Length: 600
Image (tube, rainbow, N blue to C red; front, side, top):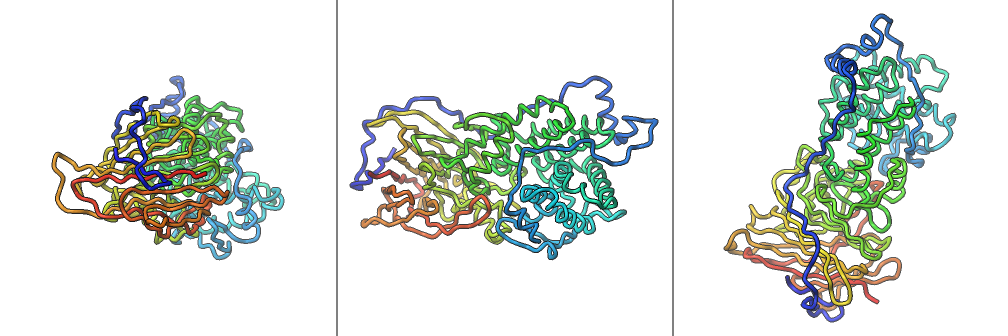
């Protein structure tokens, strides 16, 4: 290992006195393992009901074959522990949709199937998540008129009697599933008005949407949308008349889909914190539907909730908010805490989420999070990022090293045109060769070839003056193009005051290729931090808002300060700066050491 530098002198800082690393070695992994969940045990009669419903026999014919089918109605009122965004709800009452900081008048919102909305507006308008925001803004009596106005406009555009279903964004399986769940959970807001004709129309649309999902849930864009679809089908089986066959059908499909979505350690296969939060929220809402009908959820659903929460907490920083991974913005602590409280799961963050692929080191008041796995496969990715071996680092509530994040929020204040750039390797705090992504970034959130394997070794070790955690990881994303493997070594002292790093480029095979290639090691600096280059051009000072001071020192390469961008959890972009260590490296390999240390 090359020797990190002392921040005071700029000279090599001796590691020779450190004891040999000790601890558990994490076995290399090539792919995420799938969880295995079985549907609830049921009797022969219920199995027959489920099979008949799957084959298309109506629920009313199975539940009461000699009775006229019941008219659509809701059997219970759902009390969900999840709350919406009050600010967005107030904007709705004032006549505007407010999505990631962008206001659009309700009267100007085109809800037709042919309308071209940005993805965030599609999710809000067609998924009816705005209902939750509206309910959080004021008592029901003050909100119902707005809810009915928007609902009626949407029904006129997308749900005319006799019109063809299944065209346009409104009939994307994920949007339809979220819409149906939100109609169930926020039913008092939609059905408490005096207009009986509208109430009948809403109930008819609810029943028809449930039937549409029965037939089309398998056409979902990805596993998470399929889980949403099965959750909505199960909720319909609980809350609509003659629903037992549908509930049995939905439970079996949901538990199977969850098993295909979630890895052994509880991380979903898209590796996205936003997706993880969506999966938790879906199960929380569905559990509320079970409670409303005085039923216990299947044990597998409770077990899955308990499995999903710890990995999410493993991506939290010292401020309690989430890191910026796989397209997510920096979700604030309040949203994370509210979701975890609603789940009812009491647990600690996972530090070693092997299958999901993130490593977390908590040392003193500092937190280090490293992406130590291949990116998600194309069929799982929604806003897949080429972020392998990128890291984030925080000290207390202040984030020192971040990723840009926010690709999944593009279409609000973040322009859609820069979405692919936010998914690139250069938008993350890692090494980049020749301005190329370690994994190909494709359109529609998908990823191509690149990193296929990540090897990782995590150990506790002794340094002069105290202990430390050492993580060594490598990826093969540049092996095919440049004949080089990127290996990163991070050592964080137990008191959190010093992070030593080394980035190595190791040739593939015995003999490296001839020539040189450009490299850049990027450190995106958190918001509110003032940067200043050192006189010798080998480092920089970081002045934090709380008055503390950190120093960055690099061994080789030119250190520059460049502009960058950071997106918060609400989708608001902030101008920040980045430190860049750059130069040329031989295709025969090279190593670059650096040190980040708190001064004083």
